[in-house]
Image (tube, rainbow, N blue to C red; front, side):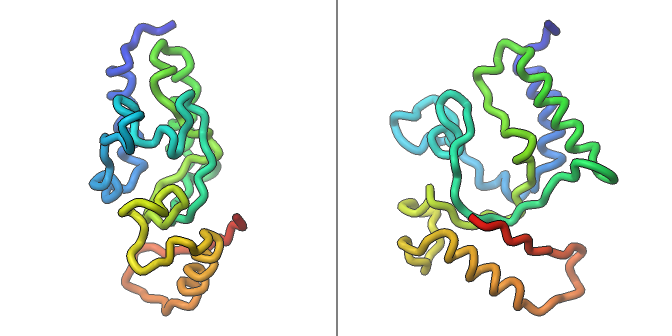
Length: 163
């Protein structure tokens, strides 16, 4: 086993994550637990992850950028896979949870999700009883009918994934 501390490992791999993540999303991150029973636990325990590190179901919608897995641009994904393969070798592996490689993505804009229905994060003016699939369907229709502009250096391609 290699001798590397968790701090050195996370420091060495942190630039990878920051390089692949959208910076605006960082401003909204909080280390505050969501309730008193989670004191000392990361905010997404019992939200996106179970206490044992396994991934929970997380119904919602969001705008994501997929990380290329093959062809041009695959180096970022390959680097993340190396991190995923290396973590189990270290004693701190129980202290962090990694998404499965099939879930690797970059969140561009946060949508709505079931976990936020009864929190201040729920979008103003949206009925809390509206099913996520209905919100997604209506949002998709609006986006597909949008007028295309030519001033953005990127283009969104809507990929309808049934819930």
